[in-house]
Length: 164
Image 1 (cartoon, rainbow, N blue to C red):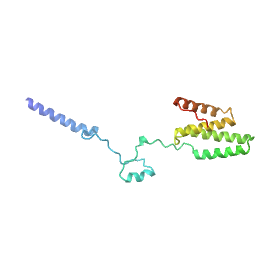
Image 2: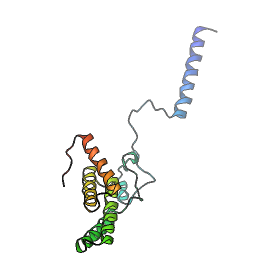
Image 3: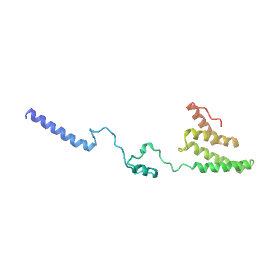
Image 4: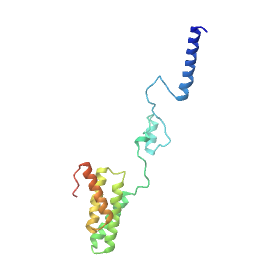
């Protein structure tokens, strides 16, 4: 074979190889821009109108998981307020104290672990609630440990510990 014939066969083989490999692996050497996703299977009610305006939906990697197991903070806060008013009306009642401790502890724990509250709010609120529990029951194990945990978080972050 002549040199020019071998050169043209090599060129044809390499061209065929590129023509076959590029579509298989999805390489597109012509563009470096990322494709914008225009549709998705996870469309929420508020995204329906957003998507109809020919704009991309939100990126699911930037959306936190929706936790339906998270307790309702408003319902827990309402129960805690009722228990607090019952304790104020009957300060010597062991049932009122117990109800207050349980309701306040539940709200504090839910506040501390809530993903809907900003962490600046959740830790301050939880610490205040745990301190309220410790005023009524200084030996409460969960309130002691969780308040120590929150205080250590504030210390690790170099932030002042809330007094309220």
